[in-house]
Length: 559
Image 1 (cartoon, rainbow, N blue to C red):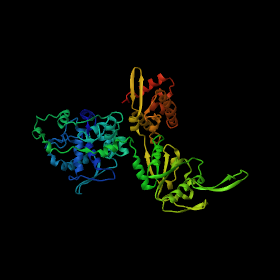
Image 2 (image 1 turned 180 degrees about the horizontal axis):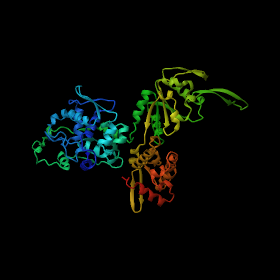
Image 3 (image 1 turned 45 degrees about the horizontal axis):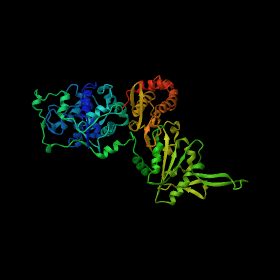
Image 4 (image 1 turned 90 degrees about the horizontal axis):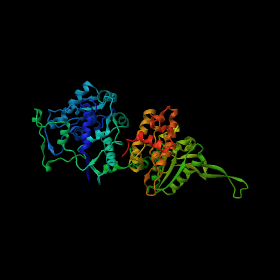
């Protein structure tokens, strides 16, 4: 089923760019086009007029005609110029526009330098200057941020998304958001300063039909029947057999972006990384699902068996590798010295005896133990190419070599200060996969319906957690202090649904979320009130008072 951005959302995006307060210039739009081509401070891109991606990016950013129309002039307008109604290269025929793009970039760059240019190469190449962020913010963004919803609604106004059935607004917005981030190759740093990631709060309506080019031009205020320019401005309706296909996002991509994993890698991606590296560490703030991922990996048919150990301050080499210990004799009359394999040696032996199957060892909270002491001389064995001599034989085993059918997964909380002291010898031998809060799951799968003061609320908990985390980061500038999604996930019902009871939610907020925020007071006094408001920060026990304060704080974040 082909699904489109609704006509109303496209109209709203046009109004947004008309009144957004951005510099009315082509430069910001051209920057977005070049981002699609992969430009960065390290990567050159070529202004190659034969590259179809260059035409695609120009079409998506500025085209004001649809695929059913034929045209020659006056058919492109960059959204940051909507307020003035200035066409892009209005006197240039369509077929020559890409050739003029090089001249536009050169002319603009001579005035305000965004790029390092090599005009002698054929085609000309560009690279972003290291100062591009400051230049864009102060000169073109005018210290605003671009609404991701409005940008995506405009950019994909003519795109079709292949779904099996008509999606919900939540699912459609999730796919559009992820596709926009992918399309423009936005880095995490660019995401932070360039745009307002508002698609969690303000959703896009899916539609079975797309907006027409004539409607786009009407909303832009273009009068097609008068003026000297319009003598060249011929929008001729094409026969259906001559119409070019609309740009399409295939079902495979839509399915990938529909997954409720937030901005995290999928389980399959993590498993593939594990297969490649053979040992990985899942990092992230508490509550981001590290344990859930390890449970899913443990159940995967790729592994015949999995074991789990948990490191802690008193965990020893003898428990993990093996060693000697004292045990009572069978009649408890005396003590004897015994040699016992630890968790690693046990699973190593099993894996070696069964080379046709794969084994998994999960090390929970790997950074809470003294890793150098726990692994001892066996650290080098993690390279898989080495056999090491154990300090003492264990049950007749004097050497350790990790077989290729044994895989290791560690978990680590980035909020734990011990992470800073993780041995570099360990770091380079593991792949690190960072998990971040999953707002999508909260928004779609966790329900909190409240009837208060003769009004019904269906709170968007994903949006609420995102607001809370945005405020935490704004105050502390420390992403390791964010809250994971599990802070707002209740116990599932027998049917597997996640529904909050109002009493339990109040307790969760007062006795789990608030104490976590209060731990941050030593870093910045008053942060709890800054994040959840003065009233809620006091831990209100009276139910009516609590929900009066909660509604006042988050009433706009409803579905």
